[in-house]
Image (cartoon, rainbow, N blue to C red; front, side, top):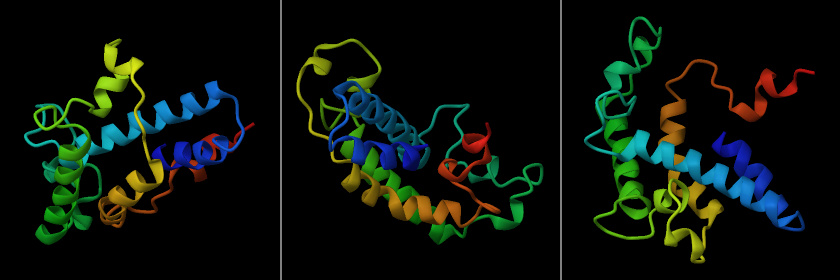
Length: 150
């Protein structure tokens, strides 16, 4: 959904209605933040699926156990995620986290905040690429049959 939203948002900025631009931006930020938590929040909450607990993802039940990333790959994903978590979501380091603009009606939402989705996608690219390489027949949502059914 992150890629799908980003792909729709960038062309929309060129002439779409303001509401459409805000819709795509908010959707992008929600999905981006979720992936930051997946890759970067440590320690995770008890019920979180996260790269920090690979044994919950690559299990015999899921059929993914044979595709478990190496320790080096897990560390690489965790490092990217941790750096981006600190940059965009760590409230100890900054006041203008993604969450503060999305989750609550606060004064943060009334102030202008510049977001750069292309840069953000580039920053997350390596972690996504590594993770997806350990999934069978990965199809992003933009290629999903769900989106193309009548």
